[in-house]
Amino acid sequence: VRWMMYWIVFALFMATETFTDLLISWFPFYYEVKMAFVLWLLSPYTRGASLLYRRFVHPTLARKEKDIDTFLVRTRERGYETMLHFGKRGLNLAATAAVQAASKSQGALAGRLRSFSMQDLRAIPDE
Image: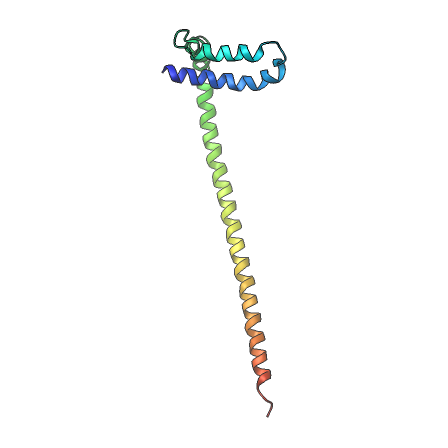
């Protein structure tokens, strides 16, 4: 459980770090403070990740649980519909390509046979 709390808090830290690096990285000792914060999160003596998780992350997730569940159900349904749509579209494209390739190759084969047979007929002497 302790590692789960750490990784959740660390993931949130990494997501916010993307923006904070752009905005406030010019402050003196920014990178040193950031490193100290990560060590504080990870340290078994300070238990920083557990503290942040219990005070901020867990209450927020508990308040938003119904919204998150609704969003996940909606996303799953849309994902299934999208997969069916693109699957049908892909199969239609594959079938069309197969039919076109077969018709082109059949025409080429018939033309080649026709040319061979015309040569064979011309090779027969007219008597």
